[in-house]
Length: 334
Image 1 (cartoon, rainbow, N blue to C red):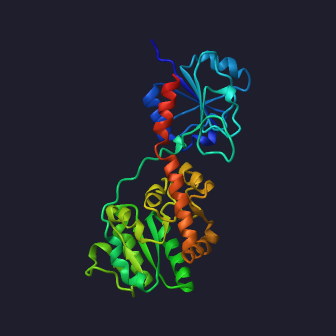
Image 2 (tube, rainbow, N blue to C red; image 1 turned 90 degrees about the vertical axis):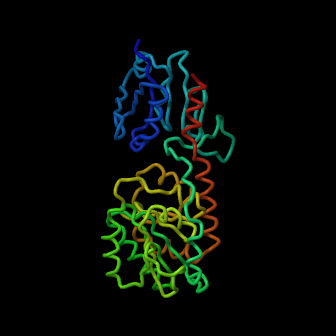
Image 3 (cartoon, one colour; image 1 turned 30 degrees about the horizontal axis):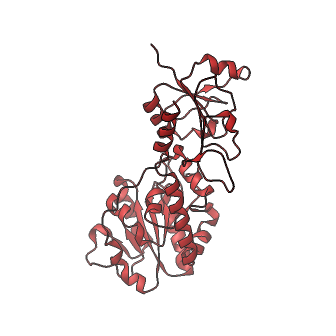
């Protein structure tokens, strides 16, 4: 006998980058029928377009095992006896339209339902840090009062923008940059380009002393373990994929988990993680024209960086594990 499908009603834009969420739904509950007003699916999951008329009868004919609503989904009543869970329900969601209301964020006032975090973000706890004594090598810079800005996990085309921002920041106040490309195949070519800027540069894997001389301006990282482990050494982190971007989601979770203040550029905002973090004030956001001003303001204001890091960590804690929590609720609902 053919298994009854799980019907997911969603806005087109809500699932464009939601493959991890959709994959887990399908793995947990079997056939998944994704339906959106415009018939727009994700990269791995196609979608049916909702009919203009007769939506209630159309839904009943599908004979779903359950109905899931996502965000501002069309309010189509489910067939009698079919469990309904409203995921990422708006604060003013009508509780009569679902058996369980799940909210991504807490509301300012009373709201029906429960807060689970946003499962579409599919955030999991970052891996524990590797080396824990990396920051000691920057002690001369710290004693000299230098700020440290970390451009972490840069992608093709972003190093040039990072250097442009760094030169403008140096013009205002002396500081230091950590640069770490995301992809191993780019380590050597990016370094060859970097030396053209004629800035004193230390390569992490070839540092001959136990500390970075204060005359240095750039610390070049070329291995993934150090890329992840060096976050706490920076005053401010700019994640790769937010300056120019290459379609892959930027890593916000690791620096936020390490307690860093994070600023993002104009790219990558199509990804739900970046959009959610910006909306919640978990990261500072700047367009290309405002990037240097935003970074300079944060690098000269320790209290603002501390508040931003705390907001980022709180946002990460709210949403980490949300997908597992939502799946458990859907399972309970039937």
